[in-house]
Length: 633
Image 1: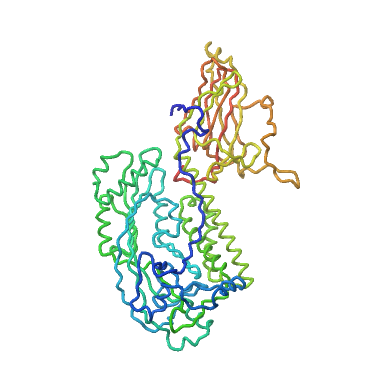
Image 2: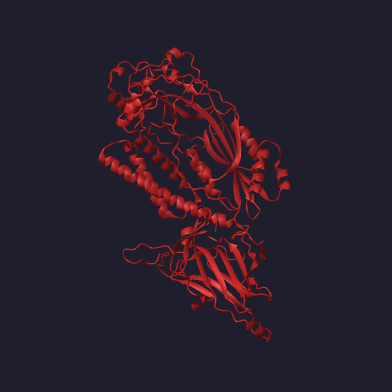
């Protein structure tokens, strides 16, 4: 690829930093569900309006319309006392994701999230009369940042005062699709159709079984839990995930918008498959992956179809879709006229918050295991699997207050955070390599700059110009780019070139050129770089900008810089420069490599040796074993 010039005054990276910034994968606790404040704001039921036929006999539904609820403490004394004592007032109504084990009328324990095997309610018949609402359509590029969101598809936020583990089945399916179809030359576009049904509830006159009102709070909770499943809401969803092959070198925002718009038109009948192939050469549609939930074809399945058959398949699976339960509505037993169970539990509120955060970490790590960044790092995957198994075994004891249990849970929480940091680090490295892959790998030639009677020339390629230096090692430095992307940066200089070589070349001697090169020589047991040892009792100090650098005359320089006993590397970028006499023919460089040595394990640049000067080279690289992403490199 020939040299490319840029205007003076540009950034060090020239025009090659137009890829999106990385978004740090943070685990956000799901929002708490607040009780309704008025008759027109029933927050437990999304997109539906509940109007019970007889509100004066239906205390659990009436409580949705006003703040009047069974009280344990009077007025403001309740809030004051809650701050002074270690207890929590359980929320009256909560919505959680539906589980296959759930049955209307049965109980749920607030502290363990356990489904109780027996019902405290008298026998009742539940009339299912729900109908689907208006369908919603969304079209977007499918990326990993959407997979890690708990509020995706059939995942809903868990209630604030119930220790229920959110299922992440839909996320896992989509993560698997992304993992199998991930490539720098493909993007996935999701055409999604979904609809919620009206909610179904147990009869408003349901009552406790005889004699249960005489049980103590402890006895009742041990047998039937704190909440009963008062109803559910069904929904259906169909995702048509289109695998699109990109024929351009990079995926620009405009190209992404073009692909998304075309997929939208195709599924809505605005364009035929034959016309797509004629309309654009920038991309092509390869196949469609169908993910259904509560549709006619199969209650829950993932399969592939040809692009030409996708619209007909979508119509078929959506026809008379029966839906599947998506949300469970939990009511505290005190909502019933015949039950006096207290909503007070002797557990601090922050323990519920801690349990919720740990559940979010668990779900995040499960989705992260399917990310392509972790596929080749078996030790890290095994560590994360072990932490997940520990959480599954200890989740029910998170709310216990014994000293031994708290010690175990604190250790488990640290392990979950440590596992998340491992996953985030690998995903961040993956995003960094993908961003470099999508960069323009051409050589940028900067305009010369006059300096003390000389002219300064510089060429850049790939990822260079880190704004922050973190640590200095013996031969190079650890640097940081945007979005906390980290790499190593090595600088060295050549010996003074022999300007008389031009005359020798004219007389039939060798060409007036030299090779500036960088390479590594590995050996068994080679280790990653370590900071130089600091004096005993002193911390490693960062170099001050004001400290004088060694005089260049003391460094004879070298044309070949070799890192001995070093692990193999990936070159991510390089920069080479020199000071050149004014009035002389401009210097040139030559690079013979398909990608100009980006993602290579070495570097070789032919430099002009026709004038007496020094050449300065800077290389940005990473350790190859830490960036083992075969789908990218």
